Image 1 (spheres, protein in one colour):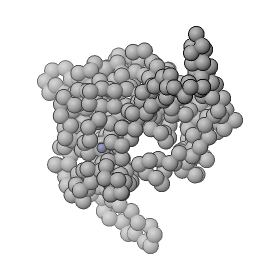
Image 2: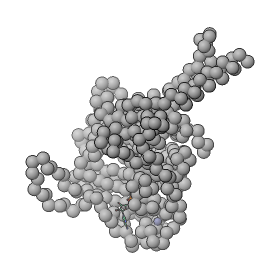
Image 3: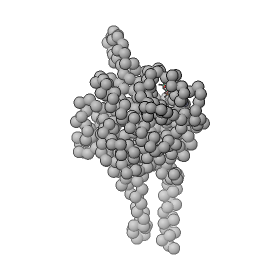
Length: 374
Ligand code: AMP
Ligand code: ZN
Ligand code: ZN
């Protein structure tokens, strides 16, 4: 009885401290030390206005939607369709309004500090599913695994097609808060003649970490996320009452993949999915692994959807760039998928300072996501 009441008291104290002591700290991104996030959970610290969750377009088919079946002539030429005969499940098409073009523009005159890189590249749309308003967590597991395979296949093709393409970025905007202009579920491919700065920084800093510590920082973060322990001691005797292997930042775990809440998350509900075994290049992922990725992705998205209530988000894939200069970074870089739900609009402070403000502690957010019954 006494033991029970002590335990209750300790747990109560733990709960109170969770409720009552708001986090207010600047957390350094462990991968990119030049980036940091202000985690400020006190109400008075809220500089951001919460976005109203917009009702999701759940229609299966919309006659006027250029991405819906029957309207295939409303998109520029099709690059591929799956399956290639009969009714398609997903399609890749040229983007009607590409941000980068594959026609070489005339190099303009550049003066002094006004330097520019030619806007050469590729911009394609992947119509993720024939059903207009289906969310990722509602797609079948097989379909999602197929979609990940399609990403891989097209990335390989683009690299082979043109050696001037230095990076192929796969990303998805879902919902107006995430900048999506088309309601029909889709992802995009933008292939650029330079490695994007974000990817470059991750590759560079993780290599620096590797040189100092002889291990991959992403693998270290996964280990840390998995092995976190909380120990509750008896106050008087000092005896261990309970040992909890919390996996504090773990949101979801499959056989080959893990979804974790980054310690210095920029977005309140940001989650990253990484292979559990070290792997630098998404293009080397086997079909069996993509199958597990689909499972972890689907469950993660279902958790996000349940907690946020109709998640509007961006996700993007970061993998080792193909060009030779990065091939020595295979041990230090670890490919991953970053999911950034958009529940608030970045403010002037955030744009002006580069310091993202996160009003929900990542530990609490992970706890809530884990608690969802699937
Ligand atoms: P988002 O703005 O994220 O919803 O992405 C939609 C993308 O689809 C944009 O990049 C548009 O340029 C592109 N787009 C819009 N209409 C069409 C169309 N009819 N065919 C192909 N791409 C389109
Ligand atoms: Zn549609
Ligand atoms: Zn690793």
